[in-house]
Structures are given as C-alpha cells and as structure tokens.
Length: 357
Length: 168
Image (cartoon, rainbow over all chains, first blue to last red; front, top):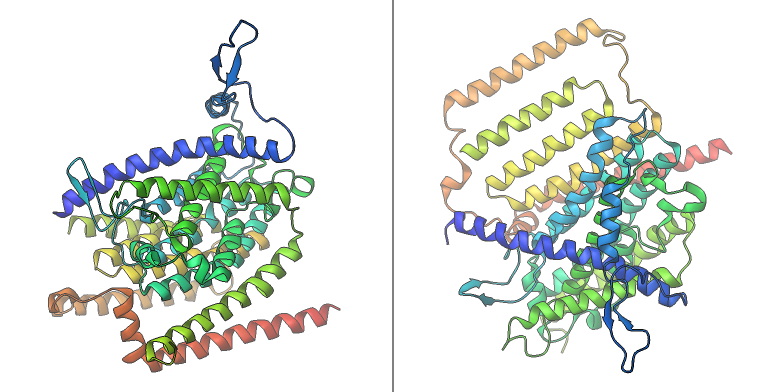
C-alpha cells in the first residue's frame, strides 16, 4: 500500500472507532449509574425511554430496558444549559483546557488492537485491526499520551481563578505524575515477556496463557495505577465534594463540563482496553484463529467486564486521604513494581541462558 | 518537504509566542506546543522512539513542573522588562545570537550538513535496535548519565529533609 492509502485507511478506521467509543462513552455513563444504583439497592435512571411490552389479558404494560435513552437526555441537557464564564478567568486557557482534556483521551485509541488479521469486505487488515497497526513504539505512545493528560486538569484548575479549582487541579496533577511511575513500571513486564513494544505482538504472546496468570502483581499495579490516572474512586479526591466542592470542574458548566466528563469516560474505556491487551489476552479467545471477527466480541466483552469492576470498586471503597494516596503510590506500588520488574528480568535472563527448565 | 516547512514554521511561531507572551503560563504552553512540533519533526526523520521520549519527558514531566512552580508562586504576570542590569543583558543576548546565527550559516553553506542521515542507508530505529546500541556502543555515557541523575535525586532528597528540620 502507498502512504496515501495507509493514511486514508487510518482516517476511516479512526472515524469508525472514535464514533463507536463515543457511543460507548454515552452508555458507560448509563452503565455506571444503573450498576451503582443496583449495588446501593436503588433502581437508578428508569424514566427516559423504554420498550413497552403489553401484558396478556390487559393490565399495565411491562417496561423493558427502562432508561435506555438517558444518555441522549443528558447530552441534550448539557448542550442547552447556560454556559456562563466567570469574569476573572484567563479566557484562552479556560477554553483550551477542556479540549486538552479530551484530545489525549481520543488519541490514545490509535494504538489499541481491536482484532487480529482480518478481512472486512475485501480489505485486509494486517497484522491486526487498529488505527495505527504495527507501531513498534505503541507502548511509548501510550505513556507519552498519558503524561500529556495532566495538562487539561492542571490548566482547568489554574485558569478558573478559583481556589477550589486550583487545589483540585494541583492535587490531580501531583497524583497523576506519581502514579504514572508505577504504571510505566508495570507495563515493562509484558513488554519484556513479549519482547516487543508492539501491542499486537504483546497480544499474540498471550497465546499460551494470559499475562494476568503469569504476572498477577503487575496486572494489579497496572489496574490500580489506571484507576489513579483516571481519577476514579477510591482515588477521586480531586473532586472530593466535602473539601473542594467539585475540584477543577467547579467553574465549568454545560458542555464544557461535559467535555471533562467525556474525557474521563473515554479514558475509562481505553484504559480497560489496554488492561485487556496487556494482561487479559486482548482480542484473543476461543476460536479466534478460525473466525477473526470474534476478536471484536472478545475485546469488547473484556472491556465491559473491566468497566464493571471499576464501577464495583467505586461502589465498595471509600475515598483515600491525600497522604494515604501519596504514601500508597510511592511506598507500596512503586517498590512492588520495581521489584517485580527486576525479578522478572532476572528470571527471563536465567531462562534464556538455560539455567531453568 | 512540504510537511517539514509547515512544521518548521509552526515551531518557530510557537517559540516566538513563548518569548513574547506576557503571561508565564501562556509561555509554558507555547513551549509545550514547540516540543510537540519538534517531536513531529523527529517522526518525519524516522525516529519514532525519540519522538515519544521527547513528549513523555519534556512535555509530560518538565513543563508540568514549570507550570506547578508558576502556579504555586503566583508569578504569572511579568512585571517591567528591565530589571537589574537589563541593558548589558540585551547586548550580551544580541552578541550570542549573532555568534549562533553565524555558526549555523557556516554549517549550512559548507553543504554537508544538509544530507539526511537516512541517505547512508535504512537505519533500524526500532526500540530493540536502539536499546542494543545504547547498551553496547554507548554504555559508558549511559551509565554516567545515570549516576548524574541519581546524584541529583539524592541531592533533592537531602535538601528537602534539611529544610523540614529547619522549620521544626
């Protein structure tokens, strides 16, 4: 293929995936609200939209999938809300910050492999189906984009010219920088085992068994680090309502707030996908070699399960205090991941030199 | 070539924006933009690993620290231009710029600097090849850099400890 064809294909695939994930974002919010409600013995949103099923012999009709139009209702509400801008804000940065929050969340989707080598209507996608397949620095790309994610939060806090927002922004940035180290360290382990930074190769290396069974510690550190990067509970203290009212989003309203919301949930999806790729075998599953299209089903299933786990964690664990958060990140997670990394490296070298097995 | 010209012009524009904006946070943001464009230039030079490291280290870590310091000190707004010794600083800056420009021009007009590195044949720029080079041919500079960074980290820890004791 010529470079032009490659670019065109990446554009088309990127469009499809971005729209799919934005739809996924909408329904992740609904999933979160419904599941949280069930975990707290409530019903959750059940008014916007349902499929009426008439009951035999008259009587009130049953409502199937009650509340499935809730995301649409939320979006309409966000768009039509008044969007005031406080007077003393730094206007440029204030408007830039939501975009800087969304861009990394979208860009990170570029490297995620969604299926193996596949033939869709005559177009052959190899070595795997992704926006940028076969990128040999894919893991570095992921880390680079993650580190860029700090800007949206920090600048939103600063530009709002509000003490709560500044405190929330600074807390969030310190937290993200601290947990990035443990995250990066835990990602090194699958790289070493697979002997590549290409996400497709990492997935194919899990043919014999998922890395979560081989490296449960690294998988745990990655998942916890991901929760901290995403500012999810129990690490959501940048928006601790009791202390900071709403942290860095306190001066934002309407769709500008909605963009922070969008960024958070899209990052939830992409980090779930990356956890699946690094530790849960990505798109691999039974019969995926015979029917490559099953890869989409498997990875979406894994993303769904991981999203449910994240929501479950939010429902079960209380929020950490700030000093607890920092000491957990620096004194527990980082040493664990460094030790795990060192032991894995020694083990691999010993195995290569033939001292084992 | 078209891509290079677009990237070069926007890189220079970002650098000028950094120099001329009155607000320190805006300056830092222009600097981030400049780093991102330089990373894109590395990509066009077939060096994806360096590009990613550029973004991770400079845009993702160093400028974030800059922003922290600016935000925490509240030193966003630049006061008057000339502080102490403003005049001789300007002359010094002008002289150094002239020296830099002349040296660039001399390299350019010698002509051998413009031949791209890839003309020597296709270079393997995968992370694995890069790591092998780093740990075989350049292992001594690598270790020296490591020791330097370690010394800096220990220095920071020592300084922050003594400061805390002083406060008590």
